[in-house]
Amino acid sequence: MYVVFRQTRDITMDEHTHILKLSVGTESVEDLADWQASARAQGPDSLPRHITRMWPKREAEILNGGSIYWVVKGLVQCRQRILRLDEYEGGDGVRRCAIVLDPTLVRTSPAQKRPFQGWRYLTPADAPADLSGKRALDDDLPPELAGALADIGVL
Image 1 (tube, rainbow, N blue to C red):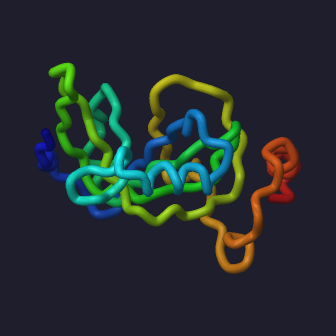
Image 2 (tube, rainbow, N blue to C red):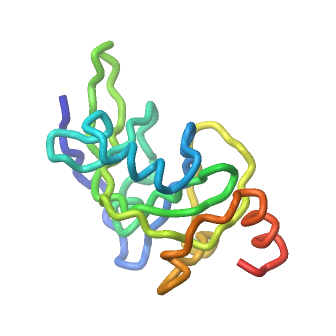
Image 3 (spheres, rainbow, N blue to C red):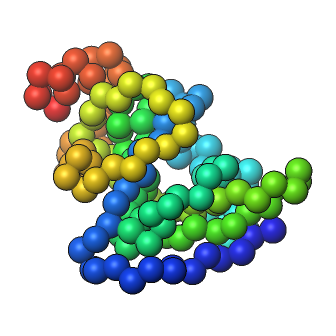
């Protein structure tokens, strides 16, 4: 069962934050897109969502223009705008947070990230830049090469 969450705090137009999340089990951005296109990853409105145990304490900032930045194979490789947070109750009766996402995956400059559990807040200043033009359409580099190139500032 889904319930749409409403903002509870007034915020300024320029105040927002992002979420950083590991995409466990995916080998590439294409794998993530394929998973999100499956019926299992979508809600009743056919939008992709990520179900998490914890409700973000900074929901107003997230809903004011925040995105979820996906770490794939140790690198931040893409992001999706967060549309809303829904309350979700699983078959086990436990209430969770469904992060409802824009279906468009936006490629970002690769940035290495060590493994972590759950998700982390990410400030706009620390978020990797979006790739544009031809670079956004380039085939994926092997993760090790992309990480090494990002470390030396080439990517």
